[in-house]
Image 1 (spheres, rainbow, N blue to C red):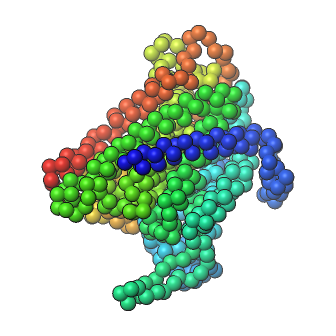
Image 2: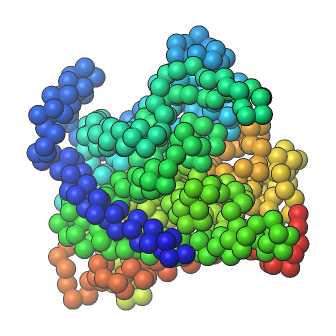
Length: 568
């Protein structure tokens, strides 16, 4: 337990140490200031604009920005779908894999990678060729991460600019996100992963003889490069079906540490960058402190639940007092609990253990994090703008309590902003609950569960929470590769992504036009621990009111039954 606590503390310390300089760099990139990459990347950036015909100096209103961003993502999804279908005729396919079938799986996968979800209802090793992995899925990992980042940057501009109608140029922001931030970091982490033993090749699959004399096929592929961007971009998914539990994808405890570190690195940096852009670092620190507080609460709950293990298995002598069911011994309880909490706090979805095998309360906290939305660090960019919607709600509630017009950074929060923030918070929640409700009353939904009772309910609810929150992780007990689940989850992924992004951009469009009022004695401070406590309380209360009934019927009931010795 001591070693695990050291791991947790070390993780948070290293995260902050690395996020602070990265926030400084991100601020310079998006404010157009000089960086040490200018001699190399400035000419490349200008070349991209010239080839693409982008008028880099022309800024856009929020509607223009949203329309172009949506078009960019839809065209990307269509390209992924086409590559999947035509895979059998495309190069870099040493295993001669045919096109992705059925069509609904191909559509689900295309939407999944477009929305930064990376939900995988297929076995990657036997479904996707190297060409598809590299040109479709890995490329989409960059594009979806850049999409989240630019929306966060737009929201920062909305709160820090004064009385204007434009929010920037979407194409410039996408290029800078990809070329200046995601690509350099991906190169660094790819090399680190290769050094740790993550494979990176284009070799045919190996056929070997086991010690028992049986034949086994060992999948190869360009894993390290996809691993880097899927973690840094909080995309999730995996090159292998076992994901980051696979020794070729996550071979050592240090590679495990690097992976969980890379998931939070950019989201944490963006929050600090907000304080820099606002010319008040305390604003960013307050939001970061809220994320940290919520993360520590969730990590503590997950870790203690798994540390105690399953008493039924312990009484049968199946395992030691600390249950390793569903976990890699090389990572242990601490490494598994940390990974599970990080990946569901962010919209990553990569896993190094099977959440379906966690204790009921061990699965409760990852599930709750997804249901709260992308706010506890969250996805790249999505964590910041998701949390900012709760900031708007909190400031409005505080304004009502003290009898003043609510304002944030000197800008008034009025009816339009409240409507947009409420939509951004409620839309994913509605689709989680509505999708789960439809699934539990239909044979197509319930027949896919591996377990009966409350655990089967959790498997279904987890899938819709993962899709609507653009997370991508799954309770492995749900067989989701069916027309019903491929269609339902694809809708949830799309709405969960753009049902939040569009209200956020609309809110930004209204805020950027407002004048900034000077602080007065009646201005509520949004930088101290009181604000952090109130913001945390609002998040937990909203989550409790929305989701506690279904959480009670699922993991809470299962936990109580487990303690009584009931098996399913």
